[in-house]
Image (cartoon, rainbow, N blue to C red; front, side, top):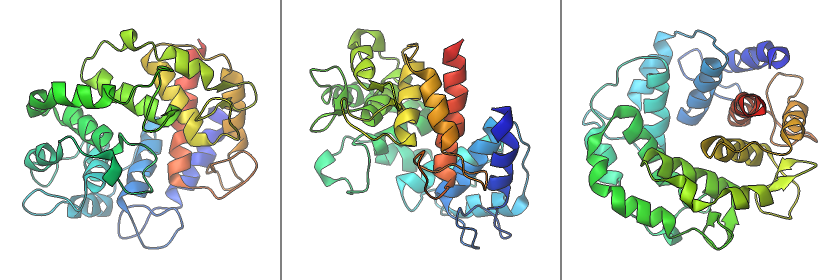
Length: 275
């Protein structure tokens, strides 16, 4: 971790916008997701960050009556302000609880990598903000997630994927569901690969950094020590480019703040599991 820390921090800071926020392609066009990933990286690497323009930008993402443009915008904005130990412009509870509902996975945008993504963000926010109202939906949400567990003990829509399994485990864990009875270790083991560390779907290739991240998250939640931790770490290190950021694949590609976050968080989790 020490070898890549300084380079990663420099990569992040070079993408800070003068008017606040961050943008991975280095224009004065800050966006909520890049700002969240940038601040998360700095937090994980114990790097202090204070910037009034960034605070103003994050607060501007919330409307005066407490709503946001989307659940995703709410997540990135709120979580960023919490990372900075700063107050929100106004209480987002009504907006969050209004959106906390069971939805049809058939109507999700095509770019979603997981059927659980909206629920994953909302439950995380409820937990982070200590919003007690989600207890009213606890059983319905639990049933919604469990409905997508497959015979291989993973989770997914048409088939189990490691990304969806990791998000399902995060949601159920936050809801205090006894995840040990799910036996998801069986599926996680199937996703292990001696070359890539983890793949998203068993017996497939190649693998990308978000799959290693999902494997690290899932393994951490169920306290499972992966068989190929060293391979995971090696793949992640190969994803770091000369500019200090991380790409999606070890064989090259553009660095992004999102992929750099996946890399740094994964290295932290895998190092802990390695002990």
